[in-house]
Amino acid sequence: MLKFKSTLSSVLVAGAFLATSVSGAQAETLRLLTWGGYAPDNVIELFKKETGIDVEVTKSNNEDMISKLRATGGAGFDLAQPSQDRIAGAQFEYDIYKPLDLSKIEAGQFISSMLEGTKSNTTVDGKIYGVPHIWGTSGLIVDKSKAGSVKDYTDLCSDAVAGKVSYRLKRPTLIGFAFSMGMDPFAAYGDTAAYQKILDAVEAKLISCKSNVKAYWSGGDALMNLIRSGEVTAAMAWDTGGWKLNQDMADVTFVAPKSGALGWIDTFALPRKTKAEDAAYKWINFVMQPKIAAMITASAGNFTASKGADEYAEDALKARFQDSFPPEAIDNIKWYPPVPAGIEDLEGKVLDRVKAASSN
Image 1 (tube, rainbow, N blue to C red):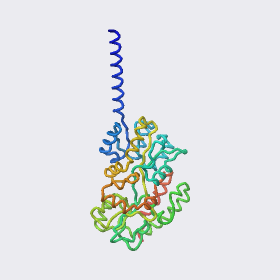
Image 2 (cartoon, rainbow, N blue to C red):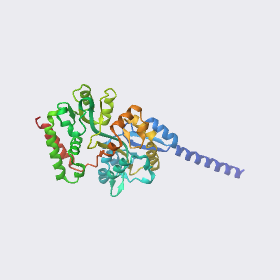
Image 3 (cartoon, rainbow, N blue to C red):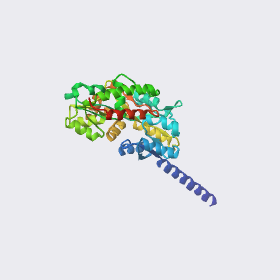
Image 4 (tube, rainbow, N blue to C red):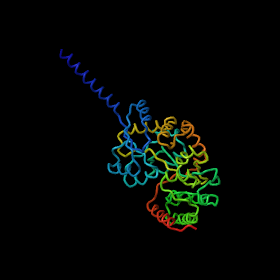
């Protein structure tokens, strides 16, 4: 009888342990720190169905991500999605991320130029801290029926579009014009004097161009209204804005400039104290599958670095994307690198002088 009780107790203990283990496996959770739309419910459901892993989403932005991870020394989340130009500086200063093990990432699922660019821009002390996920660009929104000659940023200063132009007085305008003028501002980031020389040339160009500008836009809705009304026929703005306008204005679309659209990439990065690293790699590989990536594009409105995912996008959006971005235009995107300290102060002074200058 004693032996039976002992055996029964062992079975019960083993069963309880097994139940606890199974429950623990089922309860595994990936804590994701990301942007709105990047982890839609339908994708999370498919991921859980395939892996058994729950995904807990915290919506954030670059500044908030850095703040949260800095406050905890890289704890509290298992996977984060900062922009590529916000990783190296934060890692160097705060040590909040963990190097990626690229052997656990299915590199063949990525657009190679984006993967290599992001790896380069997120390298600190020889270690890589980010791979690309969602991306977008700023370039040109053009009414091709009225401003078909506008192919690059400096074309916004041509007589053909006098008084019908809009762009922001922000750093992307400075950088875009620099590239269009045959200079490479990113290559001069490490040389303050060289960068200032580029800014001086761009400043003179933007001041001479003021008479062409109908308005300096600050909000996307304001720009949309200017284009819809016909007051503006060519502008510097984001790709998604051009595609949205194209839905009801067939002649208006986003154009990747000859000198290259300016690209941002939101990445996958591991917080230094991640507790679900394997789950993080599983999520990265899962969402980079082309069909899954297309579901995220439908949610976020931007395309991903998943190779071939545009083929699974909604037909109209796919057509707009492929029209704006043939493969050579994608390979020509100028991706924002990390911003050195002091650069934005120099840019701010230039923008203030352009704003204060009188129109010719």
